[in-house]
Image (tube, rainbow, N blue to C red):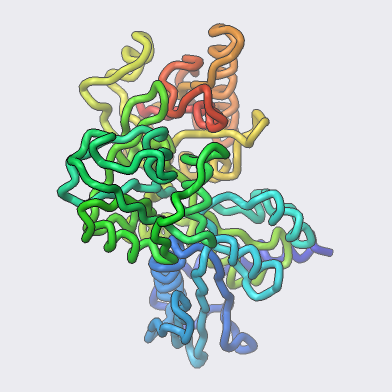
Length: 450
């Protein structure tokens, strides 16, 4: 029954998807005469819900031909209603942005149609939502943007770079004075997101692990923007926010053990090579999703939706090419292969403990296919280069890294996209320490354009 309903929804969406390209239409089959009032609701991450979700919803409604699109704050802080006139109907979408965990609670309690999350679903949430299907499947988990958790300081703070280990020591209270990390003498004031926040969950996972905990006198915030503004006004302050909320503060470069410092920039975050990069998600029931909510998801993944992701200040998943820096590191063969190539802003990664492309990678195969089908790229060729973490021998690491590139090549060949012979360079150029639990991020396939 669920499968039948899902197929029916997909058929409806494919039919309605054609109307997204025309803003001139004043009425849409998705909002037929029997549909009035609330279209769908989103609960969860403030990182997504503060600006990105409202902006995407406005664009989506405009693409459907809606008029008089307007936003109204609700009685509770960080809650918003977006209303519009569509034909003869008044429709609206509600957003409640109180943190990622509240999104999953909203799904569980049937109060939300879509959960916004700035971190992956937890095992406990997976169990509590099992009645909605496999919440880690491609049908339920939708990566909508890439973000970087920026470590921010006052613009006049002289500190330019910190290691993950130093950041953990600062936020846990082991380091309390800026002079201990190369700054001017002065007490460090710590600002952090609250416990409901997916930004906090991600920071805790990527920086603290199980070895640290937040200093007790840290000032906590539900809002990224409020936290950033407080740091920007405090010469002694340090905090962490989503990339779109750096505002008037300054982001510093970050490195892991045995890796090069990286600033949160477009390429490093888009490829998820920046140590504190993260994915932003929408989660939905695997089956029985409202047709309007599914159509919204389809719009978010389109080039128009991803353009709004960029406009709002996050990193779009639409591939772009970037010429490599004149000074680069890596094996001699790697440098020679890529000397005259351009790096694409996408890395392919794999499901945990699997050789299968993860949900984002499967979506990126389609994006890369569309990119290569553009007239200006039809005579160009892709070069796939695999990397991995350290294994028992360097030879085994090289073989596995090449096999990862072969997996991507096979998926692209299925879409009739040919590539140059794949390459594998094993554990070279780690983006995180190979001694950490996050070393899975080193298992990646870079994409270059010849």
